Image 1 (cartoon, helix red, strand yellow):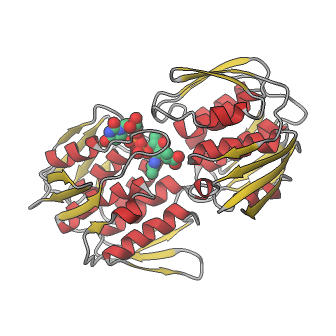
Image 2 (tube, helix red, strand yellow):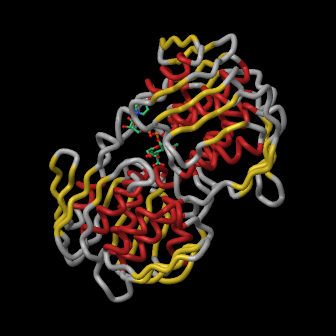
Image 3 (cartoon, protein in one colour):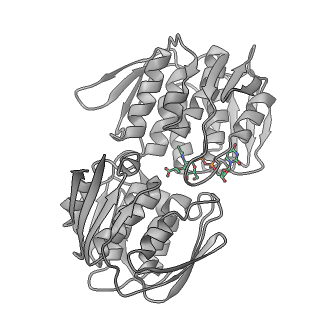
Length: 419
Ligand code: EPZ
């Protein structure tokens, strides 16, 4: 097991490049199941969730090659084992994204029911109901989803809730279904749009991306393609908050500012000077203390739940009182008690945390619980006076490529040590 040891209190300055998006790469890797030829994917982030996805696909009979240019050639065109085993699914819930493609291409699937996680029960009822409506026979028993179909048939899918991976599962399934599928109340996250772009390059007929209505006309087959994964807007946002919380000035390159409008708007409200170019954002908070900003999470294009924990850390040392309301997940405040142990003045009231900014936090020994909560602890640690240790760093490695290298390039002092 590893922990991070952080010596805090230094403003972060300099520039880094964002990695490819985890939440775009995961569905795109699973979309390789639909294709009759290999996919060549570039800008894929080196994260444990990507390794888990590759292991899962290999268990099913896929092959992949790591190319010299660090792109990945993935061939899932002849799967021989239509099972997503519990041993892997329990480590990555996004394995549910294999269901739609397997049903569409191989007409059957046995997938371990993804359990909940630290942030919530994370049900998959919307995925199963939609695929049943498209003609899948689905039975859930002994912790597995048993699904089969003669042929999926296009139809109207109306999601009661906006669900990113349910939208992605149906989107992928619909590409090879008979006829037209319309997804109403579809998720509009940029990662869904990236999946649409990749599927289109594979020959899929899809319209309506970046809106709440996706229309997919089923085709007989999908071919291979080359695709460059979009940048990770959540990783980028995390580093911008790192500059804001330490009173520094950083530029994050290789990003799409358009995909981060809500987050950038809140950073400007917090008093940061922001300059955006086509594929970079510069944030300057030199010598200033952030102002408290109220946050309410909701589906894209509004403020992303995956940036909520990071803004609680920012508000913890900001000037003034603020509220942060989480409307997507029922238990996404695991970072709050840990931040309080660093001297933050945070009070949970239902799905809202009231933040009273303090001048500074003090280092402490902390425990990571989930991916984005862990990120907020790193932000608090680099801002705090003194030493902070964060145990269970594997949570961070799921979503942040080379996190200590990138932070240290900006002037932080983070060491990964075995314990
Ligand atoms: C995706 O999770 C992301 N993961 C999450 O990122 C992200 O926080 C979330 O979308 C919201 O943006 C990936 O893309 C791999 P949802 P997902 O379905 O699709 C309820 C991270 O940190 N719901 O959009 O699982 C659900 O409980 C991760 O990178 C049902 O009730 O989230 C939640 O309240 C964490 N039934 C709401 O919908 C269902 O069948 C939205 O969840 C599905 C979802």
